[in-house]
Length: 496
Figure 1 (cartoon, rainbow, N blue to C red):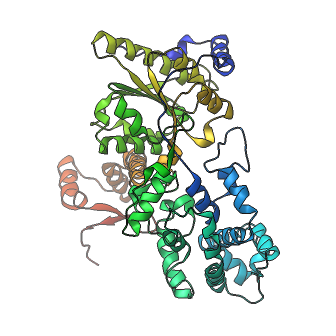
Figure 2: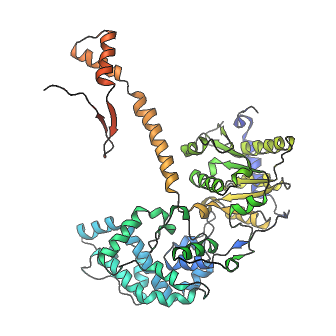
Figure 3: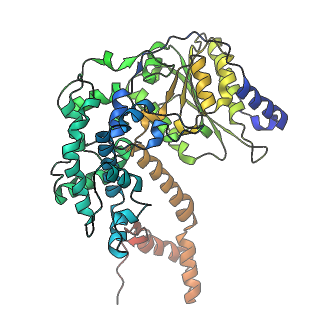
């Protein structure tokens, strides 16, 4: 199959028609796909409230491009309770005090401010609400480290009063322990916990400061109840058995992509690189590989735009995945051709697989772009799974998938905390490329030698130049100091 530029085939009217068609298509056709068991989020919503997860994840700052990850009804129920409010606001304060410790410390000591005068670093609404609930948190001449100890001491009597919000079939001590740092009533105990927290902050649930020692493989432990409780019990040397209590037949969202892949025979994965996070996509594919499900993938189409992130290089170099990478160009700078290119290549793959007598029965669309709705609706013979991101999926698209029973999956949930290994790999690749293509590509030692000879008004013939290079220049290496500067190593000894 020869590649060609889809962008060159488009004009403004065609693109406008396609976009209008995808956004205004009626939701009349109901697809008959089996609904997978949906994991509940009741427990994680209650824990998220108590440990101080931001309001927007409960839908309180609802925008068109934001779907709540926790139950708003749980937030409203618990926020009406004084004890729950106290615990939540204390946890919010502790997270901010530890995360912004250096900046707050500077403000308090250099500018002689108390924490109630640093609104950019300390949530003032938390301080006000605590005061209204009878907790006079702010005091004169209080050290920052003492404030952090105060949080622990206030939590001790109030956390037990929140047990009423957790069902009896959940072991309360396991949840209670998340709020109490070992030796949290001492400055040294909090310093030790803060050191670990700041070293692995991305691995904590929504970066909330709790008594937790995260494992990189955990991902977002507050994704749903079915994920959270088994991990919580395991950390307490126990096992959670009754999964029927945490799953329910709900909306069309699937609990795990593994459920979809387990039922499929031949899967086509189409990735809109312009509307997907490369780190999260790589994480999904790595997890499928680890679970032995990648063998069901006939092909992974990566359809990219020339203006998209270079992070996709980390995936393109994989030899173990059935990848095809296609880069679209632009006729006009403001118009991308990725959606049309991906649709055309999608149907080509379907046709080729059918001709080989290996028909595609399932497809995964990794994109939050609603322009792919016509592709989904007009291909009823294919079982689709749509992988979305919370912040990039419009409410209209979410409702369209819901009303047509199209399974969808939030990759934010699956990979919310990020993956240190992937971040390291992607950043390292980019640094190496920048050094080799930028710094080292412009460095030529023979040019430097010739400039030195001209400056000193000296000459060397080719033989002398070659011997000089081999004996003195070729043995040197370049290393990098802690400040990032390049440093020559193994320099030949020079006489004084």
